[in-house]
Length: 105
Image (cartoon, rainbow, N blue to C red; front, side, top):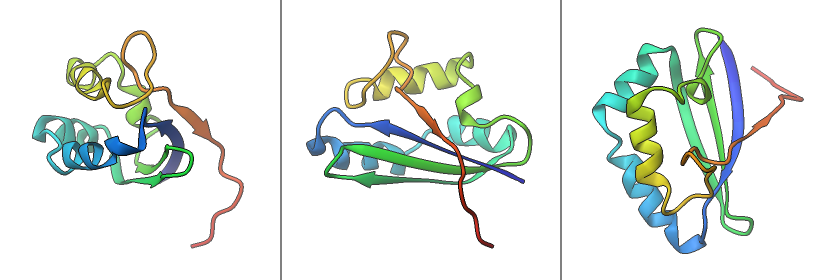
């Protein structure tokens, strides 16, 4: 099992409740897609001071959620989230991979 961590950013701290609401109501087809590609134990945390979202996920294969950008469900989700997150021109969230420097089981 591999792990991946990355950070993203909200446009404004006032968007955290909406961000949480949208993820609490994550689309079943998106959840199914993630699980079907081996993504599990996926968590996102928020640092209010920096507006940074920190995500970590386990993956049973080589790819994770960050490798699904061509999927229409993912592209629709990106468009849905673009009003509250910092994004690239194609609505992909600005996402910065974080290398693992320590892990303890």
